[in-house]
Length: 345
Ligand code: GTQ
Picture 1: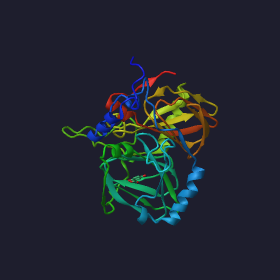
Picture 2: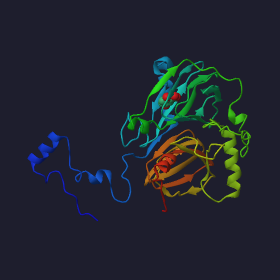
Picture 3: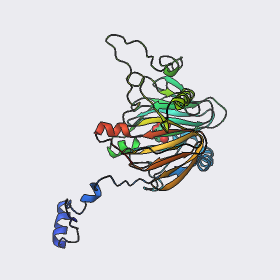
Picture 4: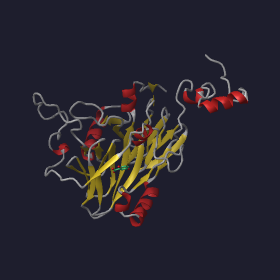
């Protein structure tokens, strides 16, 4: 074990000046900032955003800023550890709450980061991804993988609100984030793949010799099926929370390259104490009510609320009512980088 490392102040001023002039700096005074002992030292702090607080602000944005002036009418949920305006909820995960009003369209674009939407409320919204029209119903998970054209539309008569999750911070950090725009897409006249090729779990279109399935075969995961699957699982497992991974139905892999999604269920009165994990996460409450202790900080949540937890956060969930949540996490990214880790508590 190395001892207390040397500080900048210990070095003579002329030497420090010469280093600055040469565009270098000594590592050792900064070493522990970037390589702390034992576990990371996250900048991110737990965050909580109640829908009661966000909805009026979002509706006001609808009055103040026409969608043409916004391209995407979104309020960004900023990590408290980085402060308001931070375009991230954790180191790698961006979340924003988006509003589309009846008759509006959000223009087609594609970008390097990947996105997914969790539908919060309102009927009649849809996203078109690569020509496929994906209806947006409460609780649905809808993917917009990086590089795929997408535009949003609204055929209903009440505001539609959804939560966007993007791996945007990562792409910004890598200086790899940019978008291109295009006219609204022509829509194929058929239901989305969740209603056609992948209607039933465990069944996929027969493999055609010499052809490979699409990289993102299913881009909408309807909530009604997810909830039914969780309820059935809950009857036959004692594990809590009951938790299902959203997977690519062709190969079982995570649905996006860097972000993963799970659906969670807890019955009234149940508690859950997951292991410490190296991934960060954003939880969105589909239904129910409960509390989560995050590193000793109490977060109270109910339907449509969103909260974030930093890496290695100690979590204790308690459901006060039957509860369903979707967890967005960055385990797929960490596995690709070879360092994803879980620790017993
Ligand atoms: O709907 O395409 O929250 O491009 C941020 C960037 C949503 C979107 C966001 C985006 C979108």
